[in-house]
Image 1 (tube, rainbow, N blue to C red):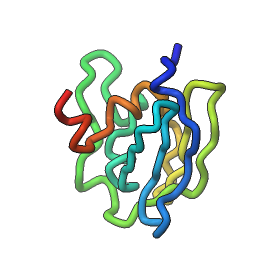
Image 2 (cartoon, helix red, strand yellow):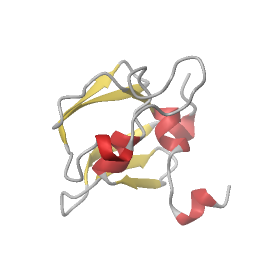
Image 3 (cartoon, rainbow, N blue to C red):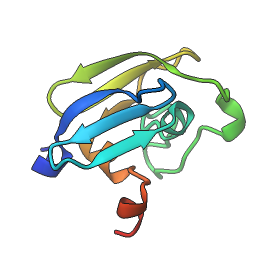
Image 4 (cartoon, rainbow, N blue to C red):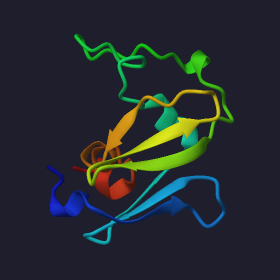
Amino acid sequence: MTSESNTPLEIGPTADGSALRILWKDEHESVWLPRDLRMACPCAGCVDEFTGKKIISEAGVQEGVYPLTIEYVGNYAIQFSWSDGHSTGIYSFDLLRAMCWCDICSLR
């Protein structure tokens, strides 16, 4: 279950269109570059289901990868269809909030 602080109010591109932005219910803003999100894909094709070790390599993801679509999965996650053809990762809101790499969150 997604906590109140991990509930998005807005999901969309940044003003310049170069990144994904989520404004959370607690008014915190998280921003990710597309390639960083693609590299963080939590699906079984990118992360070993048993060990949790990342399978995907830096060389395996194009520098200019970007989302073609972003779909809601229930009330708890989003799923991307990427320009490299990948589309199986489900990014829960809890995961996305934990992945916030801003100066405030990196101090936690």
